Image (cartoon, rainbow, N blue to C red; front, side, top):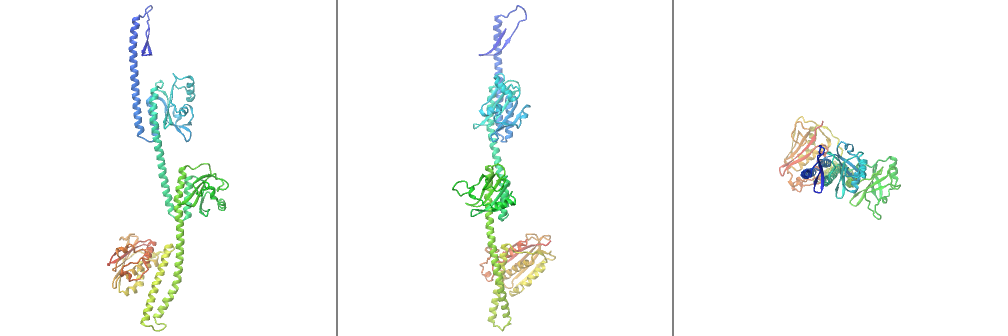
Length: 630
């Protein structure tokens, strides 16, 4: 007796019963009873099946929900790959799984993540975008679901050809974002040997949709992160380039540095920078060329018009071109990158980079070179301006030196003859004549001081002031200062006090310039201190900032007075060239306004510092440090 298990219009199985005894038959009543039992069994089986499917679907939804949470919590693309594939396996309980990413740039599939013993050999494998079933799914943007119990023989043959072995079930779901297939989820054979269902396809499709969004976000994050890292690196490189460019005002060095960085960042084989003047180029820097090649390049007339990008447009824009007989500089060059170096709207120089292969620079590389040229243009213009200033300074220095030389001879004659007349060597002189001769002598001294100061100032500005430092006994220098200033101090009955620390080490300085510094400071104190005033020279061992330090590497010198002092307004200007105070008491004494400016320069040129303290109408102290001789 065979009784079907019917559920609605479907028969899901049957109950088979048999008699062993001969001649014994089933009755219709037994048949009807068995059918009733079968109907109950069929209902129970269907409910159990529905419950199992519901639980499985609920489990899949829970996995999908968990997947969504995981995908939104990370933007690391490798982690996204692993999460997508592992959750796909957990949903349908399959043996083999692969996550395949499509690379448009290379036109290839890459197996980025795999699960299963038979899938490991495919890890990181690359295949064309039209490869097998995955290529078909990618090109058609369609899902593929094949079970061996329902597929035709042609499809099974195709699957066997693709996988190399018979496969009972395959499911391939494309991950699509903005109508673009980013990749595929390939699932092969369930663990329980059953086929994939439409519910499986539906849930994996939902997973693929979430995965596509996560992949797109991870890609954007990686691209943004890479661009940011590249930009930060570029800014760091540009900052380094700026430091190197601004460290020197030599044009040749600036152009050589610019060219070196351009070749390093672009990967070109050779490069050349020329200054533009009257539509001609003058080489300033080159790299990658032999001496013979450079001679030919210098002899060659480079036609700028061959690089103009638009007809009738005289503006030269950054451009990559193929070389020809008219513009080729290196015999191995296949292409050139032309980069104008502009200052505002004027092209001041041109950089030519030559490639020895067919590689073209991408927009980011080209933009970096454009920005490099912008930074280089500032350095080049600064070096040009500096050269012009140097020429002007040299011309001024030469002129002042000439004038000083021409003035010294007549001033020496005037002073000599004045002294001769004053002594009565050519006859007696009247008191009035004596006053006149004194006035002439004083003004000659003033003129001589002015010429000497101008000469020193010019040398300092031109960088031609020579220093010849050596170990000096400070006591000897101070004694010479006392001898040199005694006469003028006696005229105003001023007292010069010396407070010199015993056993001071020798100082390291130019003797003539150190003497000039101290005489300038003592003379200033004399001029701006009233009659019967006091001046002091103090010396002690100290640190660089003048602090008392018995083991210091500097000698701290002070020249103090109890004179007129310096007003707060004048203190801001005291070291400036040609500055003269408007104070009536100060203006009584003559001066050039150059002494303190020259003194500060001479101190700093010998490795020391100078500063002052002053209280108006109470006095001033000038401090300076001089290195100890080692």
